[in-house]
Each structure stands twice: as structure tokens, then as C-alpha cells.
Length: 223
Ligand code: DC
Image 1: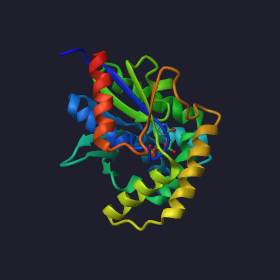
Image 2: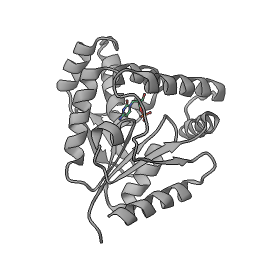
Image 3: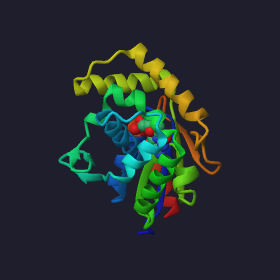
């Protein structure tokens, strides 16, 4: 077996990053880190504690006073903010609407990146997010940039919501995904961009299995 390398998976909201990253990590016996969940956990705290999502200093202070951690649950990775299990709470519509604003603050990002680099320092990790290949792990041996059409991404989120028993409106999801794409890719700090050396995979008409298979093949070639 080869060495335990670092895998960065980036791309816009709903391209299938976390689903794919989780399976790839399990297949390789690597750690999976959902960096979006970290921004979501801080957003949860801000809303809960009535911190203004525009107040960078207050958000940074809240982050420094928190511990965001991950634990393997029965069938999914659970997310904890201090001792509170926030796994489901961070997927609400309210969080979806606030998280991009919080993720745009430079001081917040700097600390998040530091925490993420700490996780990834020994390799054997699959991280998904927006800036993993460009900022968090610029030296990752494998960088994947996943994309899919807006309508396909909205359809996937819609099906996921229905499966979880959440209320869901397809047209509203399409509008929100487009707005989030625009915001995430035009913000001043670490905007969503494809790393020069990333491999782009358009998953619009690919099955989950074939996406996973393609990525595992690339990992095996480079480890
Ligand atoms: O992947 P997600 O939908 O859980 O991400 C939530 C938000 O966090 C999204 O608006 C983009 C932001 N994010 C980021 O800026 N950088 C990351 N590494 C991960 C997520």
C-alpha cells in the first residue's frame, strides 16, 4: 500500500462534495473533515447567542471560545459545538441563509483554516469545502473540483430534504443555490475558485458510484 496522502475536494454548494468525500474517506480508511460544517456550527452559535452575523470581532471571539469537534456516530459523522450535538441543527434553512456571510469574514476564515490545517497535518485525510485546494492544503497530492448544473444541484438538495422530512421547495432551492454560488465566488476573502492543479469533474450526469470510482483511481495512482 502507498503512503497516506491529502485529498482536497472543492466546489460549489450541492455538487455532491460531502457525500463523495465521506465514501472516498471510508474506502481509503482516511479521516473525513467537513469544513462547511465548521462554518455552519459557528453560524448556529451566532444565531443562538444573538451575535450579529456582520460583527467580525464578536464572531471571532465566539469562535475562539468554542470547540467544534467531530465524532463518528452510528451511521454518520456527528458535529459538536462544545458539548452540544448540532449535526441536524446546522442544516436548517436559517443556517443556510446566514453561513455565507459568516464565512466571508477574514478573521473567522484565518482561524478556521488554522484548525483545518491542524487536522490535515499528518495526511490520510479527505477534506471538502471551498478553499481546501487553494488555501487549506495547497500541497495536497490530489485536488478535485466537483461541479454540477444548478438545476441538478437543487434537485439533489430537494430529494435530500424530502428524505429527511424537511419542507422543501425546488424553485426556492434553485434561487438560493444560485445566490450562494455568486456570493461564495465573488467575496473578497478566499473566494471559491478552482486550484490551478485541481481536476474538474462535472457530476451532472454521473452516478455517485462513478464519481467515487474516478476519485479513488486518482488517489491510488498518486499514493
Ligand atoms: O459546504 P456547505 O454548504 O456546508 O458550506 C457552508 C458555507 O460555508 C458555504 O456558504 C460556503 C462556506 N464554506 C467556506 O467558505 N469555506 C469552506 N472551506 C467550507 C464552506
